[in-house]
Each structure stands twice: as structure tokens, then as C-alpha cells.
Image (cartoon, rainbow, N blue to C red):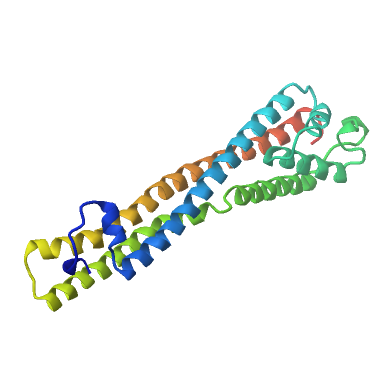
Amino acid sequence: MQVAGAVPTSSWELVVTSGVETKFVLAVLALFSALSWFLIFAKLWQFRRIRHAGDTFFGAVAHASRLADAQHSVGALAPSPYTRLFKEGTGFFSELVPGGLAAEPEAGGALTPTQLEALRMVLETQVDAEHDQLGRFIPWLATLGSVSPLLGLLGTVLGVMDAFIGIAVGGAGNISAVAPGVAEALVTTVAGLAVAIPSVIAFNIFTARQNFVAAELEGFARELIVTLAREGRL
């Protein structure tokens, strides 16, 4: 216990000379921090890759004059939420209409109102699935951001209890005897906040990006139906 040993002169000495409870809490928080930063970098890479895929997809679609041409261009792109949504919509259309997008609307290649509603449901389901896929592991950041301060507070309470027990046993009650133990106890609070702050910030950023991509997918799903109507397929 700190009250019985030399007075620490740095934060590192506080950690080295801390009690078993404090070191255990710090070890758990270190694991939480490693997991948090792993998820942060993984999601950053994922959303950056999706942003690049989205720009490529919309560029390919914009240069196509008809959906049949867009279907050919998208087929050569790497899988992404955008390509999967497009292929799901056009694939379902091909199941409903013989010949798919290659068929001429005048030759019976148009959807009935019931089939149109079914297409809307297919697109909405795919958007929801992509939204859930984008949000994979993001709740872990919220969990780490919520639990870490509480775990740090637990370590602080245990450390203060340990310090007061040492004071009672040693019979010393001056500030020089109390301060090292209290300082040791506060180390876990600092560690908990150090884990929580980047986790919460990353959670908010990734949630916003997840919703942004989902909104783009919803907008494209509506645009796909509008284009089908423009080509006379509804």
C-alpha cells in the first residue's frame, strides 16, 4: 500500500507501485483499449472502402443511358452495398419479367402494380440488410465507452478503500499519508476515461456514416423505380 512505501513521483510509479486491485482493473482497461482501437481502425478502413466503391458505382451508373447498360457496367464492379442493391433489384425484375431489362416494354416487359409493390419490398429489405451489415461491431464501441468509466470508477473506489485501510492500520492521518493512496486510486478513473472518450467519438462518427450510406441506398432504390417508370416498365 502507498501509505507504507515511498511517495511516487510520476504516474508510471503510481501504476508500478499500485495494489493488486488497481493493476487488475488497469489490465482489463488495457484490453478494452486494444479492442476499441482495433474496431476503430477496422471500421475506418471499411467505410473508406465503401466510400470509394460508392463513387465508382455512381460514376458507372451515371454514364449509362439505360438500365440495361447500367446492369452491364455494374456487373464488372467489385461487390459493395451499392452493387448488391442494384443486382437484387434488377435480378428480381428479371424474375418477374421474361427477358429482364433486355426485353422491350412494348413486348410485355412491364410490371403490374402488385409486382411493383413486391419490388419495393425487395429493395427495402436489401437496404435494411446493408444497414445492419454496416453497423456490425459498432455497438461494441458504445459498450466500451459506457463500461470503461464505470470500471475505472470501480478501481478508484477499491483504491480509496485500500488507502483508508492502510491509514487505519498505520495510524497516520496527515495529507502526505493520504495523498499517494488517493492518487493511485484516481489512475483507474483516468484510464477509464482514456478508453471511453475515443470509443464514444468513434461510435458517433461511424453511426453517422452508417446512416449516410443507408440514406444513399434508399435514395438509389427510389431512383431505380423512377428509372423503370421512365423507361415504361411500370
